[in-house]
Amino acid sequence: MPARTQGKTSSGDESVGDPRSYFHLHLISDSTGETLMTVARAALAQYDNIQPIEHVYPLVRSDRQLDRVLAEIEAAPGIVLYTLMIDEQVQRLERICLKHGVPCVNILDPVFAVFQSYLKVEETRRVGGQHALDADYFNRIDAMHYTMLHDDGQVPEGLDDADVILIGISRTSKTPTCIYLANRGIKAANIPVVPEVPITPLLFEVRRPLVVGLVASAERILQVRQNRLLSLNAIGQNERYVDRQAISEEISFMRRLCGQNDWPVIDVTRRSIEETAAAIMSLMKERKKLPSQVGE
View 1 (cartoon, rainbow, N blue to C red):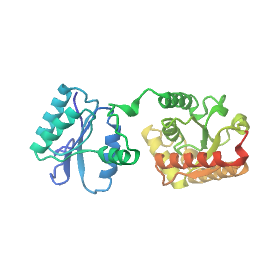
View 2: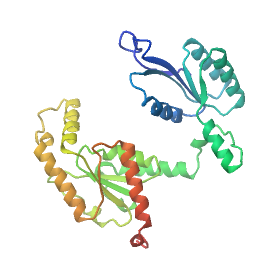
View 3: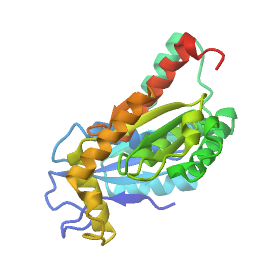
View 4: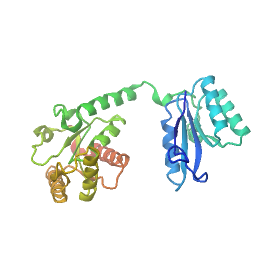
């Protein structure tokens, strides 16, 4: 069970030359490790000029696997964050960390403490409990299948089965936003708005889904499109695609289209995918509260 190590070396490749600018960060999980990485990176975002060398150990469930982790920690001491549920493994890990003077934190302990205090019940200590094959899990799988099938307007049929439909001109992050929503169990389709290409009439017939328009500033879209063409080695092949005036016209058309159909618009210029998705889910929640939606 090798760890995934990330960072830069003193030669400029895998570790940082200045020892004051980096540290070893060990992330140990009995599940996928996603929770640990999210929390760790959220915390690291608050520190400038600090480069972690990440050692990620997912699916640590046996003593043999833990032995390898402990050997890595002894070889490269640093901060240890973990989410282990087996008490014997937790005790072994904490003993070794204490012995070597390494800070060691179970990031779920404060959360468990609050839940236990409020709910007056003990946690089940179930390994990988958040990934149980329950109804929510299969809803997410179903949503992902739907979203991939209805990406970029490929299959306009079945649009009314969506929970939300995103429309927008090229490079407004429609696809990644839909995938993020699908991971939350939301069936999300997206339809590109392309100059001189008719929009499927099925879009104007939907009643169940919320339709949301995504826009961004002309400068932002221009930058992203130029980078896209550069990555494809296609600079100079589609001048209108990266013409600022043409982009402004596309944005204006998008706003008029949404205004004519009473579709909400979200400006994604300075929003992350997560922030855009949160705004969409907020719109969906508000829509459910409207009396006019009852019986549709």
